[in-house]
Image (cartoon, rainbow, N blue to C red):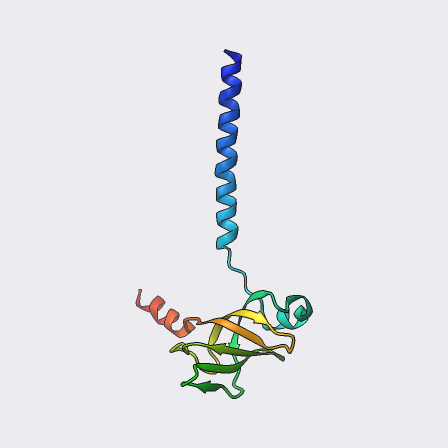
Length: 134
C-alpha cells in the first residue's frame, strides 16, 4: 500500500515538473526584448554578428530607398545616439522620418545594423483617437 502511494507521488511530481517546464519555456520564448539605440552603441563589441532587436525612431537624416532593388538605408536616432540601418525588402507603408520602428537583424563590424525585419509601430495619434472614440 505504501509503495502505491510512493508511485503515485512520484508520478504526480513528474507531471507537475513537466507542466512547470512547459509554462516557463513558453513564457521565455514569447518574451519580447528590445534594445535601444544607445544600448546597441554601448554594447556594440559584444553584439556584433548576433541577432538583435532594436526599437527606435527613424531619424530625419536622409532616407535612401531603391524601389527596384528593394533596398532601404536610414538612421535610427535616440538623443545623440545614431545607428545606421540597411534593410532589403518591402518598405512598410507607415515608414517615414520620425516613425517609431522595430528592426531585427545583425550588427556588422562597421557598426551598421543589417536588418532582416522592419516593422513600424502604430503612431500614438491613432491610439489616442481610438481611445477618444471608445
